[in-house]
Length: 348
Image (cartoon, rainbow, N blue to C red; front, top):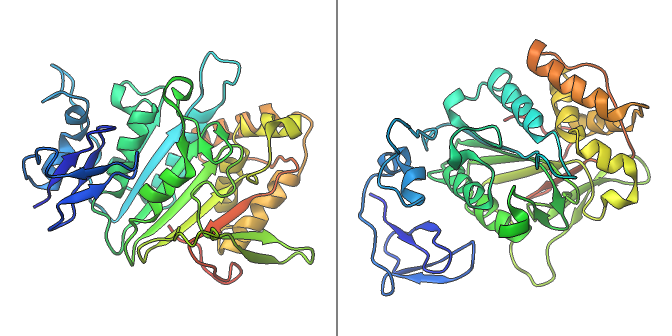
């Protein structure tokens, strides 16, 4: 049996630890106590999740004729894929294409059940699956709920990013999601035996999950780990699980630095390179994936944007990726603990 409370400050639904009388909200850092809020009715988690989205949006049941069924909360493999286009703005992207290609890869190559992949894009008809900040937070809650040893989770974001933040569809009005929040909600809850892979396609995304170790290529051409733990001593790792994140550029790489960066990030260089590496059999180890992504991104092409978009569409229609593309952009790998990237087998 599971007990839930609602944060009195930001109204996020929180799972109360067994025997605890209060809990700190990871979203707004407010302390929620059973002395200040009525404890919600106790019920089984699976039953709760079947009605999760309509309840959180203030409705006791789905609207007439609309059956809202998020994927089941439990399973060996589970993924959250977010693709944002910011349609009809000056910063419009190809996020929905990237999201569809990532789902294609997870379902067809890594055998993720269709019902265990939750998609948030502007093309969704379900209003609770539009990638607003509120829906993204609820979707992260769904992804992490009930995680246990043996589970393999994937978090993919394709959209705009600013320094240490991801930009939801409504970020100009509702704000952004900072790396501290992503670490608190995606990384720290991971129990021993569980695994999370993040693939982040956004500018300034090098350490977006705020993981303590960053892998870079040194002057000799070897990958080495750098310690990025904060001087404050705050722990940014997991609760025993494994968290690994791929991203397409460094934290300090700005779209203003080069026109190519903005152009590539808008058409999905990172997810395309990642998918292409897997499809070509270059995903044996983490090191081989990094090398393949690095090589793909560095193979310059005069018509970069249209080539990537065309290749992504080819992936969706034929199940095969086409030739490479590139720019001067360094793929990043971060993790909760260092490991040998040349020998560690890649698996999702």
